[in-house]
Length: 215
Image (tube, rainbow, N blue to C red; front, side):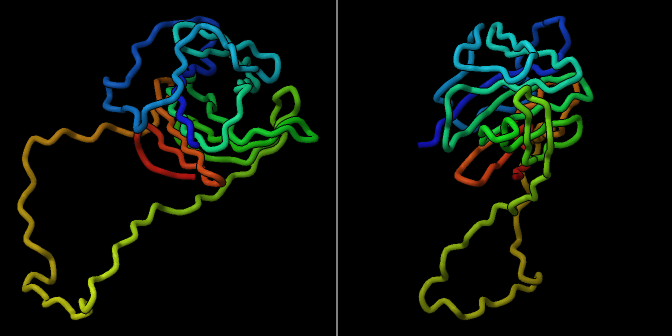
């Protein structure tokens, strides 16, 4: 059964903490599912850090200062198929992300990193040492776009439809005026960005700021 999680993270913000209004309704981004679990606490029970960086939790936010290195926080529970929705805020130039399919290896750990930078979101196959230091990464190619499968044609419906005088296009009425503009889905460096990650068997789909789908 697929599980759904909701997390709010701040990565690489430095040592000073500050309060922020969460942007669920501010910029039009919201959840596409009802989560089975939402992190709201001030303790990291059920989580374990990899390496020496100190993670902190307060008022439903998880914070860390990576001090120029890697900071990894892992759930002590394992999930097979899962959906994760989280808000991430990092200082410009910091790479944040979600490490999924994490396994122990001879070197330390291996898994898939869905990385978020100032301008892009990319997935990598990554290897970490036991202290969380990155040893290698390989960029993963996209698995392809979502394809809509059309229903079969009705029986006996193989005849060609007559062409219209306008080149086969139907005359569509003009759309209503005053529609709301779609919120921007661009990554905003130094501000809150939403990541939604769906893991289904060997397919990982990511949506950034309620925007495009990728793997």
